[in-house]
Image (cartoon, rainbow, N blue to C red; front, side, top):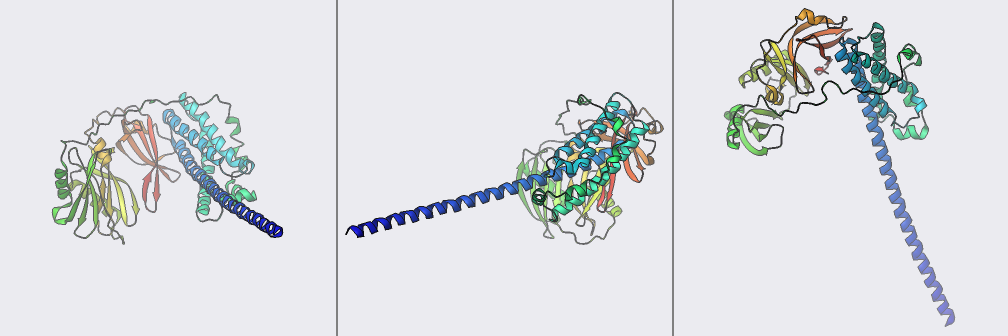
Length: 458
């Protein structure tokens, strides 16, 4: 009996031990799965962080290239100071995101040095401009050299971006292997390239520059939004008039967007071809704010010039006369054209309307009038105090002028300036330069970019 009792006791202990082992094993498995999951989440988070830093780097290096290009033709100290200050900022931000990549600093030493010297040099030149000193020929040559390297760096980063998107390299491989592949691809800037700039760099106390307009204007006046408030039913009637009653198969009210920049009534339409059209009508005045059709376009049968005329005719018929096409972008058989209002031969860039034209038959598939409704009014364009010939004296001597005229341009401070607009080239790159028609000051520079899909300005 005693033996049987001992056996039972031993079996009981073994059973308990087995349960404990199974329990501990289960805990270990659960803990392992939890840690694996957390490690995977951490790995994914780090990959996302590296990706974000890299793509931000690409964007800021592109901005560096653009501002360097603009600095080459800026001819007045006031605008030069603004351009160079922006360049200083973008180069600093590029350095910051470069430092977040999982590559040893010594492997990217020349790239870091390039961005650092762009930052320092642009800062030193901006200080000269702020104190009303013009850039010397040596300054411009140095900027030109820096711009050449910025183009090389931008092209390399774009290639790396494509490699990253296609999975040809991964950040964790760089981290694990300590490879210099990334650095070898990026660091194509010779250290000798900077030797002629070293003497221009100095020690600085820090940037102290708020700009001429530290307090932005915040007026909410909608100059082109005229008329009394209308009801939803009245807005529906506006939609019928705009589209054409004989073209509408069905119309649905989608409600009132009270918190939009311009409060609107929204509608959805099915036309006789079965295509859906969304349209928004302003509560104040019953103006068309936006319209967009979802029709697919599979062929391109009309030219850009024909599309421009189709859009201009459409705008005139809808109550927007005197509109001039400026820039355009093509995508999926549809061209989006920017039109600006013209008053007495002066282009009013704030009064902007975007029109989508189908390239198969010239049908207008969309319109967006926010810029026009925000800004349209009759301006006094008589305040021209200098001639075009006098304005040309403010231009960079290397700019080969192709066309000229008067234009009103908006500023980031929500004001407007009447300028001479000069379109020209410097070394096969197109620019738009805006010279104040009152005082001859250089107000802005845009780079015109011709792409396979359209003409853009930045």
